[in-house]
Image 1 (cartoon, rainbow, N blue to C red):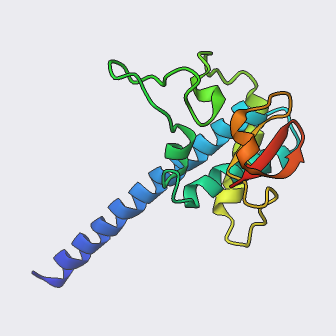
Image 2 (image 1 turned 90 degrees about the horizontal axis):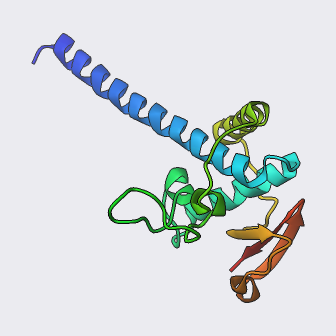
Length: 162
């Protein structure tokens, strides 16, 4: 193989790798943005950060999937169609039976910018939930909460870790 061919082959492999990485990064941004939008769009920046922290804490936990999108969309699906089983998902908005329509574009774009800043930052990020992997709205009392340690309450949600 001549040198030019080898360089072209290597550069095309690197380009394919970087394109795949870029596509994965865009998917991560979209999935985390949707999760924060549907879970906490009307809350403070701290509320957004807390939902992001729980999602990212799950990604690094051995008990949950390894990617942001897999964590966000985790849950059983009907075999005959690719839809989640109602009320069986990790994040309620994904399988509550309601349309997942993004009606507030201003909030969506603000959250998207916020998410890009978090995911693209190369600096240390402080986890404001103190390792939480679960949360719920303060008005409900799920049975699983009794077996976990409450870490913090931020805006409308209470956060927990095992």
